[in-house]
Length: 364
Ligand code: G3P
Ligand code: MG
Image 1 (cartoon, rainbow, N blue to C red):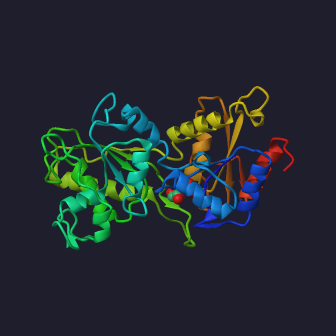
Image 2: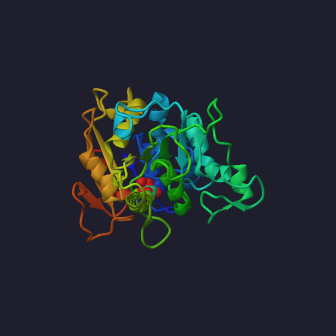
């Protein structure tokens, strides 16, 4: 069983009433489960510790896959998959630095990226500080509307430099989580992906590849109605990119080039299925011949959870069954997007798991 976190297990940080008994039921019956979320912004083990407290049950980093978890593969390969890099056919070796964007607290996602194995990790705050006077709460010339506070200074690092002393080019921009200051991040990202806009000579290097980790336009949180997510930030960046390129570089294609992973995309579901196989091989719970036969994806967002499960082409020949709950983004009566029609619609996570277990002939 796989479940989304927001809108299925928790409303903001508060577990829905059926979430705790459901998770405990799965654990007590050794039914393998993973939390597959488009959320992130912190290390998997820290998120697991925090959820262990919420659910009064020990979860480890292997029980959770966040939007940016599959970035681990890119760090391990030290190279961008060709499909992620419009500027370097065949995929770009990550020899220089990567810019890590987003997250609730300055610098946290830098730590996560370094833990994944990325070298020379830069953050937008590092760039802000690089262009600010050397001390005090000052304005950075990069984005004058955001003060460079002591907190920003303390969590930033000097930009990595080449032996020549020039600032090391950025090979890839990895959006780990929603940036908290869209204006500052849009300015810094456009400075990097529109040649010449930032006033820094890229010394002939191609613009960095731009990779998002979560397409969610909206997500369920504490507010009575869904809030803007990383997909909304991308739309704002894309719109600004178009207008600035049309105004300053009419020789360039005004369509921003980027890649995106996260639910509903194949890469994230493939990564998840691989983790499931790795965790389950040899366990009797996965069927007599030791094969993973069926996965139930219990989600609240037809555009990410349901579409992803429905459209996933499983390399392992696994059947993915989509189960939509009414407790999150989706509300009864709403229509389904193309490919986003679930196998079943249920009230909440317990009813979703109960339906799945009964369908498997398991006495819930
Ligand atoms: O996109 C926002 C994120 O919080 C959604 O999380 O767990 O519903 O995939 P989840
Ligand atoms: Mg959700």
